[in-house]
Image 1 (cartoon, protein in one colour):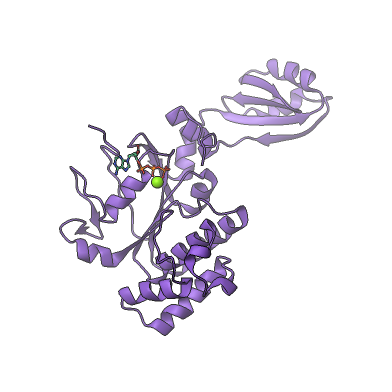
Image 2 (spheres, rainbow, N blue to C red):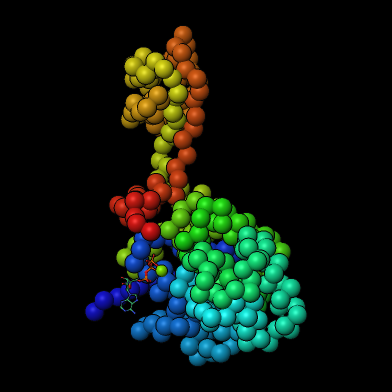
Length: 297
Ligand SMILES: Nc1ncnc2c1ncn2[C@@H]1O[C@H](COP(=O)(O)OP(=O)(O)OP(=O)(O)O)[C@@H](O)[C@H]1O
Ligand SMILES: [Mg+2]
């Protein structure tokens, strides 16, 4: 039997932004759909603010909202009509809802001249912006964002990320966000789960995850004298794994040996010495053996 996800245990704390990072098909959407009461697991238990997702489905649905890339709309209706419809389903006052919807749409760069055009005429990115607005309209206590910025251009992506950040500051909302964008997850999430083939292979803050791959200190020296710098470094005790790359020499060291290195470089020409910090990409590669940035979107 194929298992989309298996053996997952996770605990999202109230008020935090929890990121789920993983390749296409690793099970992110399946996990989010289960929490959203849309899929029933063969085994296991899910609670949202203490309520069992399947036994108290209606109560849970009132607390959550989900935004996904395959969001559905009444395609012939406009953004205004779709958003008002959604607001009324949640019992919101229409005038209040419209005010709020417009404010969110403006913040995430939606062209308001299209507000009354049918959704079917919108690009995918614009539809995504309406979906995001709908997700935040009802002030859910838990918002599940399944790849909220996939399909958006870089500017729109930034706008949506800034909006998510501003919401987190202002409201007591708990967010769970899936993505294959490491920088997004790193920038927005308090804690991150890395998924691979239906399992969580690591979980922690960005810093904690990066420590998994940072056994040694790592530095780069920007220089035009690549060979001389390389030879000088070779003689320093504690310097490991020296690599020569484009205009720089990169090396690792066991302990803080920078003063010794600088002493050794005396008389040589170098522009700067930088500390190289691991990225979530390094962590992902280390844990899964696959690069996240290589995958097709
Ligand atoms: N209804 C289904 N029936 C059978 N297999 C499914 C079904 N839904 C998902 N899967 C499979 O389960 C696995 C996990 O899918 P899921 O959609 O959760 O991945 P994902 O991490 O969200 O991927 P993506 O980044 O592409 O959105 C995939 O191998 C997928 O093919
Ligand atoms: Mg998915």
